[in-house]
Amino acid sequence: RFLWLSRGLGDVYKRQIPNCATCRDARTCTQCAVGYALVGGRCKACPSGCDDCGVDPARCLRCASFHVLDRGTGRCVPF
Image 1 (tube, rainbow, N blue to C red):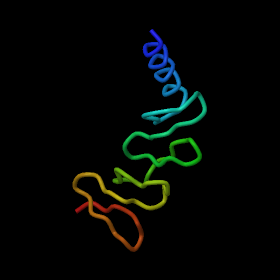
Image 2: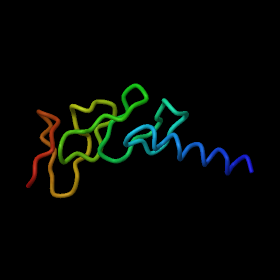
Image 3: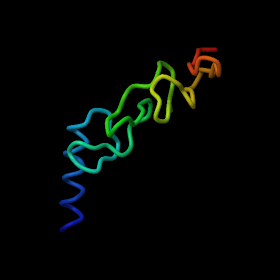
């Protein structure tokens, strides 16, 4: 019963924090959805074409399909 309650509250919290995949409570995200960076418990959008930008939403670490990383700018460009 406790596991169900915890899971239920987690689902409610995720809906309250946009683009959050896993959260600790109603105000703190611990893991963001693909394409978003975790910054201060919130999810910030990564640059266009980016799947993972770690904790810096301005620089990409891993590009989406059909994109290549420009290491100088940290942006993903289509190829």
